[in-house]
Image (cartoon, rainbow, N blue to C red; front, side, top):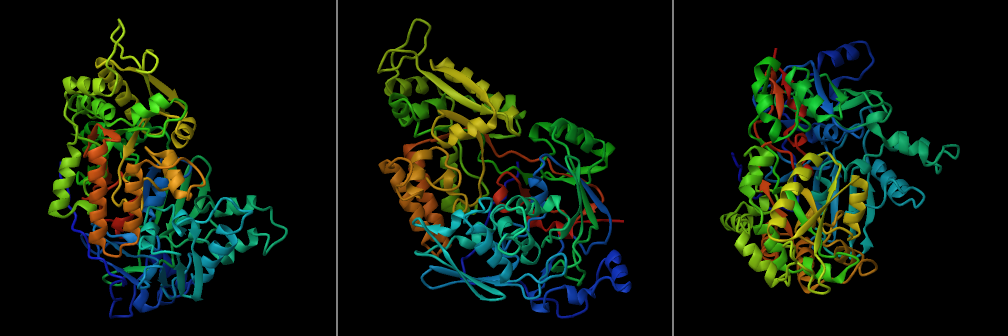
Length: 633
């Protein structure tokens, strides 16, 4: 399978967008031109930002043609896959995943000490209803939502805390905002580029949302009406900054979006984007039904939800009938799918906790697995048997030294060696067995039972099959395994509170500084160190004190946040990975390097043949500028 190796971008303190077109002549879609001629819409020049702040997008293949309806599918009533198409945060990933570039913010600048970062808004950028986007909208988010204790739906952002202290915000003028921290925090712009979840709460049009806040309207039903209004995909009245705006919502059926007449990007010929008139996305929760509809030609493009690598043979076989192509350069980007997370903070049994913390035990679990067989059984051979890592295309490993380290990590205790597994289990104290061959606990002589939690989430078929195979391999070396199948809500609670032993998950990330918890003991989701990480993140108010190894990893994380040089930050990641190898594995991988089914109609053009979809944080497919996709006539 093709792997795209990334070149790390040099870090600079100030990012600026490409210059605007020299000509002030802009073109627009026929449907918008008709509205201008009827006096229902201002001319395109008045709808765009000031010329130097307009974003100019270079098409992937060619200048596109206006028109058409993009038919697609989403798999959840909260349409995350649709939000990723509309990806347009303040800061964003570029198409090649090599650097962060300006988005809604035209530039940003750090203070010399890294304790403050100033963002500059695009002057004249407007919401989809024509009202200018200014720092007053961000003030509404900060003062009236995030810091209103009576409104819990938008809490203060986790990335706004340093050493347990929340940042302060200065609103310099209508186009300038500054975030201030008690210590250096060079990470802020990159966090804002992560998917949609960090930016979405900040997208708060004051002129619209004030009517739902008791500070401005004492008659509102607070906070119910605010919650309902903020669900923009269900609410055509909610202005947005995306290329397409919501115009119709039918509960549990479909979402219809139409081009945003005030969208702030043009192509290199001065044509206002997007090219495509509208998007119609239908809710289809059943994966098999989605695949059948794709094969029948009922979908124009789908990036997530077209099944997984196991569905590729059927999708490829029906490509001619459905008049579509599979973009084989798109990958899942998983460092492990699945990876078995081994809980280091197990609650309720000190013997089991100490056993799970014994690297001999975890290494035994790892080498007891025949990954080649599991790859064939689960993925039909499409993947690469390997240890759990983050994504191979991560910019942290772009250098020759980084590539070498990644290869070592990828193969660390990933061989199939049941004899070594038995030796390691003996060394971990499980050296006695009963008459049935089950290994016995050293503390009380009872059979040791390892519980694998399997939840009913979107990838449950993969995790369930992998867990069943792992059970066979681990029982072959004398470990009795119990599969705990439960609702994902229950599994998540066990996961966060240290009540699980082992859980199979999807492991994929490109930038561990924005999603650190696969490498460092901190972040929104805490994986193998749920209680120790909570202690560190809360300044000791919650959780349990860290071990020496976990403290070392956390210290590297803190040092990295305070380091302005991106290459040095990569070096901190490398040092952390070496610790994970010396003391690990903590997450036991099975298969990585998987392709991702991306299906596109033959006449939809300007869609690049490379993208990464496993780690949502990098914004795919939105980082490839779907606004420049088009239907070729």
